[in-house]
Length: 60
Image 1 (cartoon, rainbow, N blue to C red):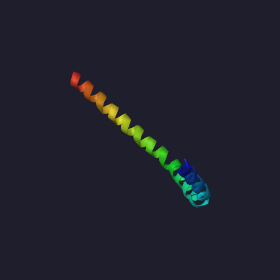
Image 2 (cartoon, rainbow, N blue to C red):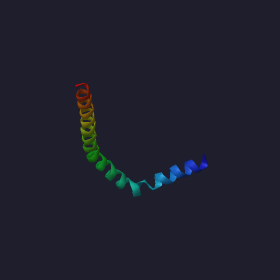
Image 3 (tube, helix red, strand yellow):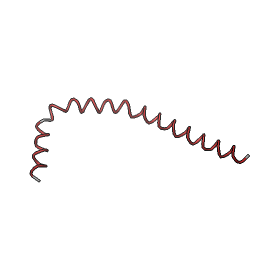
C-alpha cells in the first residue's frame, strides 16, 4: 500500500510536467478517433456486403 501511495503522490507532484502532453494526446485522439471510426465502419460494411454477395451467388 505504501508503494501505491508514494507513486500517486509522485505523479501528483509531476503533473505539471506531463499535463501538456496529456492535453496534446487528448486533442490528437479527438481528431483521430472519428476518422478511425469511419474507416472501421467502411470495413464492416464492405465485409458484410461481400459476405451477402457470396451467399446470393452460391444460391444460384
